[in-house]
Length: 299
Length: 226
Image 1 (cartoon, rainbow over the protein chains, first blue to last red):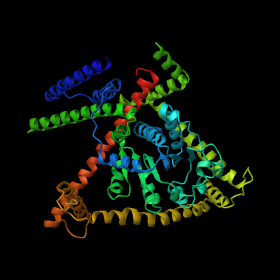
Image 2 (image 1 turned 135 degrees about the horizontal axis):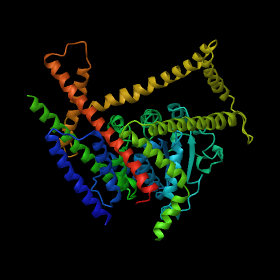
Image 3 (image 1 turned 60 degrees about the vertical axis):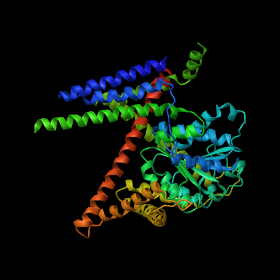
Image 4 (image 1 turned 45 degrees about the horizontal axis):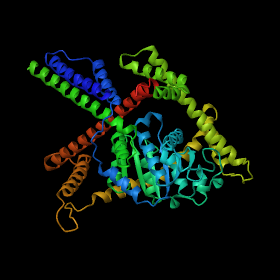
């Protein structure tokens, strides 16, 4: 029922754009507030729908998934959360899907953050992942199966020091447990004891610093999930083979959810994004029509 | 019915906070209509809360957890006296507020600049220069294992090489951009424009995601409509 009503509303929205085009051609363009309203409606309506979006898996996402698949069960994986709530719509679905996948593979997860809110976002992702019956049944233990080392200030210098010893930067974890008292960390000294590093980043310090230090200096294997704003800056490193894969923005999150079969919010959000983008493109075309028709009239 | 009750139960624990968050979201959105006092209040609250959060986080994570517990360990660990060095430099930074001895703050600042420059000199040279340049030194024609030509990969390699060369020509200012050289610079400009366009497209995508996130909060978490 919700799907039918939503589709009807979207058709009406599309038809109204024809009216906007006619209006524009008559020299009576719509105001910017109406444009905002169109975008808001286009983004909101699909949230009520439950439609499967055809979403091809891109090479960057597949490469990341393949790299994770190659890891043996029980591998030690570091998850660096370098973002804050404003970037959560894009990065949190990636983080939740990653946590679910990692817990199901019995990876030992070491969480940290170069942003203060990062470890909090990580805890939220863990809480959501733990609601999965398959993961809940595993009865995972904090400190044994996963640990949150918390936030450490110092930006790239934190990664640099971790190359020598994690303990220097994280003498205590998020819960103020001493490093040596955490069972999971007993045999982990530095990056050489970590099988894979996954970074969720929305800026700096973030993926670029992880590439420059953890990968190029200490030889870590890195995969990343980035906001769409940051992704273009990271692609050169991906192309050069300094990273194994990249989840870029909402589409990257949705693809990762699809390939790991961990359907989450990104799978819903991507429909909103597709329709909102379509509306934006149509409005840009209408704007161009208005521009050129105005130009022709002046001639 | 049970679904509605479950949803209400889930929301009840955070109703006041969620209501306040929703009001703030709507207050920020009100700017789309026009600048107004409600928007100003919401903006000020956001700035104030962010500053407070950062201050508290830095105090407890650095001064308390790292420094205080490091130099005065509680569980029989040996104290880390090196932390005093950082603490003293941090204190010296605060001297900027003094007119008479504010100049001392330049010492810790010099330390930060020197250390950062030293670290980045090598990092950028390896990651952003050597590795990136090495990636562009590729055979233009790509072959499969059976020696057949991979046309799509070859086209991609050609575009990379063409983009790098023409981009470099565009930024070469010691020769006037005329003739063949000028054409190369022109092609370089197209590559730059396409790059900026792709970057802008990604930015729009990102901003749209933020809007979707807020709409999801308003209709889903707050109003419980889905």
